Length: 163
Image (tube, rainbow, N blue to C red; front, side):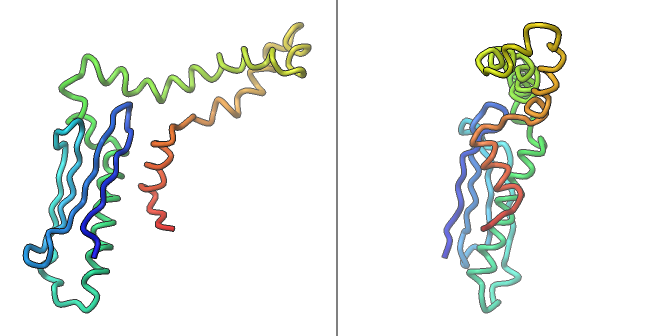
């Protein structure tokens, strides 16, 4: 029997903790809590009292727990809790929170300039008139946002890929 799931995820520069627990057949509830810095941002409680007599109860409850846990991850990533999580620190946090998204886009065009002189092919081409050619080469990289490992894991969990 699975007692619960716990994940720490980085979202907009902060660590959020998502915890899902089964209270057991004597108190048949699945509870999911979303924390930021020890403060509960959101909670969801689901009763499964109506399915206690099902043959494969443990498997059914485990699936319900997984779905409720993933739903909380999806909702976090979807921005549903941004006002609660960052609203109180509006002066300090929201500017820092969107920065990771736009910063890679604005940093991308600048990053290829130092990188190009180090590549042998870019040195001759960058000197005369093709400064416009260099940004074109960088545009596929600029269109691809860089993600932290936490963001990649969060995307994986939210997508619902169990295997």
